[in-house]
Length: 399
Figure 1 (cartoon, rainbow, N blue to C red):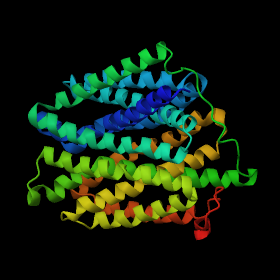
Figure 2 (figure 1 turned 90 degrees about the vertical axis):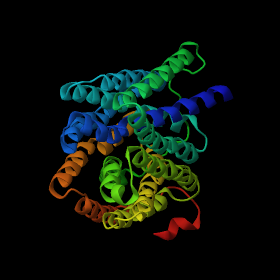
Figure 3 (figure 1 turned 60 degrees about the vertical axis):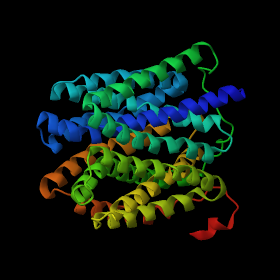
């Protein structure tokens, strides 16, 4: 692979991660404006994303299978084009049914990125942890930009524009990637790395599968709880005291995800140096404590603690993805990542339903956050029994 092709691969993988997370998250700010425009309740409108959030997970397995059997780059081009069309359609929706259908299609195209894009990064990089960390930064940036741009478009134009403009941009990027594939600047054939040939002892497989699946599910649950509810938590607890409008809420959420997204790169560097297990369990424990703190905070420190919680959630993803790569047959990596993300994103509908129910019953999310914090303490205790990976630094003996 030439240096120019490698740079293009890095660019499209990063911008794809940004676009996917932007499109998966911006509805949680846009819904605040639709709530006022359509005179419908927050929980009723939030439930329109139920099937879309489910498809973000369910679509990952067929997307991973297609990326393994056909082409990761081809699936990425389809993602950009499909997301663009679906987002524009959301902006043109005038009924609940139309918005429900278009949000569901949006979720389906969102499902392509992780199985195709993460496999692309893993097999195209030399320092895998750093590459994954750098790429993961753009996921957090995408969530932040989604919140910021949505707030801006809503306050200065309308909520329809908040869907349509990002959709046009995604289509243009998809056309660019398609042109680079057709002109053979970026190969359509999959690249297979030599780095992940070792497998754990067969006796460890069941333990690894059980622990990783439970951990990934709970990590995804925390991610969905935070991504979905943070805009509303800030709205509920800080709007009056800090005089926040939609733009300011968008800026707050944007800051949380952009700053915490930088922790992905630090987490990737640490995953290249130290035991992935050590990085992983520390991040899980940090989330557990901070979720409990966020549940009990109602002043401006809420934004700081929310940022720290999101940072712990995102910074251990490089370690998690390296662990999966080391324990997966290389020709099925896309499928394995698809299984991971069907597990982590399929939990989203449950998160959405619990958030909606929590708000319906209490007009807040205190008990939900406390419960999730306790759940992550249990996950931390389970993750301590994961096997170590091959690193020769003293920190491997930390647990």
